Structures are given as structure tokens and as C-alpha cells.
Length: 333
Image (cartoon, rainbow, N blue to C red; front, side, top):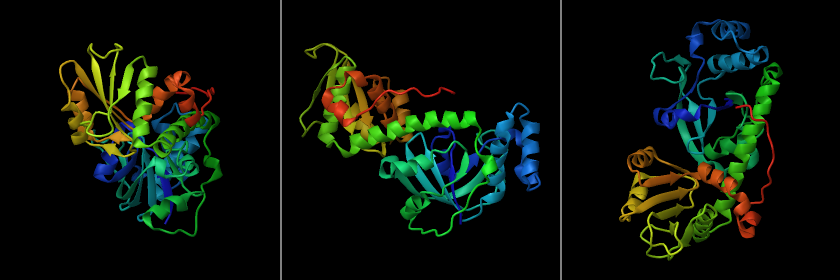
């Protein structure tokens, strides 16, 4: 039994979890099971399908596709960090390689997976998160694999290595450093806001962020608030619309549509609803947001972005809570 990490694009959303699979792209290469099980055959097919691939990227990309088809076995463990909800998903591979030709499949190369555990990122050590932030789409998890396996009550004695010739090229590796720096900062800020503030403190933090953005904000009574934790407005007295009613959830899991609907039920004329959490939102909650112009949902990743944009305006109290410094990293997006 091997332990694999896999990255899939953020746009796939919750589909891999709901439908039980992992997948990779490279559609133009066709059904990969028809190729001879050699790395050279996969390199040749990659270049035939994508002739503009940089020379240094051929071994990496072909190696990913080869391993997905030939090295993954049934009962192997797969770890998928999903960006849309900031969860780390751990499952067991339950099928051989499959090629799904329909246009409804964003990524055609599939393996069916029985998902066993879904873990918020803040519950894992940062070093383990760094390992699954690999630059490669499909990679072995070795150094911190037991950290993940312990979550599904599995102990693994023997590891395995990947051919050193498949190390990523310089530009890919450099670009990954930038991505990992951003992800590490997000993880750090969310972890601090979750572990070092009480729920009531978190409400005050959100109110302070709104003040840094130019609003006047006040925290409501901690009891019998009807789901409204903060009230914000542009005029100092709070008489003129728009008035924003804010609910703050200090959670790193997903908030549901009923939670959001409760906040909407408090709105009157000229009032808007803002829901803030450290995690994500279910699909029905996001659908509700799209259909209600007076509703805005802020998840953990977006909240971190707002914190960084307004960091210099934060009070010393919160800058001490979140000690950050500005750095410059390559922008290879």
C-alpha cells in the first residue's frame, strides 16, 4: 500500500468528493491504458499531444501520467487537499484506471476512491501541510505520511521513493514556492484566529476589520442576538442605509444554507447580510448567495485576503496576534 497526494483544480469543486474519484487532465493524450507501460512511451505521447511542452517539463508531466495509470494500485491511500473548502481529504483507491470521454468530465483520467476522512487544514501540523503542497499534480507522501494515516487508523512501516529524474524544472519549482508561501500564510492566520480567540473575541476582530475598511461597527450583545453578531454602517450614528448585519462563525468547516437563511431572516428595509467564517460554505449556501443580492459570504481564504489588504491599519493588539511581514515572491501565474 502506497500513499499518494494529488492536486485537482479549484474549479472541480466538491465533485470528486460527492462522486468518489480522483482525476487528472491531459485529455489530448487519449486513453492512456492503450499505451505501453513504459515511461518513454508516455513521454512520446505527451510530446505528440502537446508539442509546445518545454523540454524540462516533459519528464515531470509524463511521469505524473505514467504513475497515475501504472503505479497507483487498488487499496493505495490518496490524499487530496481541496482548495474550495480548505479540507484535506483521505481515501482509499477502489478501481483501476478509467478513461472518461464525455465532455462533462473536466479531467478524463479517473480512479474511483472511497473517501474515509475529511480534515480541516487547521487540525494538521504545518509541516504536514507543506508536504502535500507539492508542485507536482501527483506525488508520493513520505515524510509525514503517518500523520495522515493516523487519522484513518492505519500504520505503514515501509515507504517508497520517486525517480529523482522526475524532479520539477526550475520555473515550476519557483512558482510553487510562491504558491506555498501564500498557502502557508493562509494556514497561519486561520490557525491563530481559531486557536487564540474566543468566539466573542472573533466577533470583535471582524468588527475591527470592518472599521479598517471604513465602516463604523459595533458588536451586539453576546446573548439573544438573533444570529446578528456585528452591525456595521457608513454613517457614525447608524441611521442611514445601507446597514450591514454580520454573523461570525469561528469554524473551519462548512456553514450550511439554513445557517445563512437565519441571518437573512433578520433583515429589514435597507439592510444587508454578511456571513463570515474561517472555513467554507456548502453548495446550497453558495447558490443562495448567488440568488440573493443582499447576501455576501466571506470564507476563510477571502478573510485572510482582507486581513492582508488592511494589515497596516490593524491595531497593535491584532498585529501582535498576527505578526506578519511583507515579502516579494516570483509571480509566475
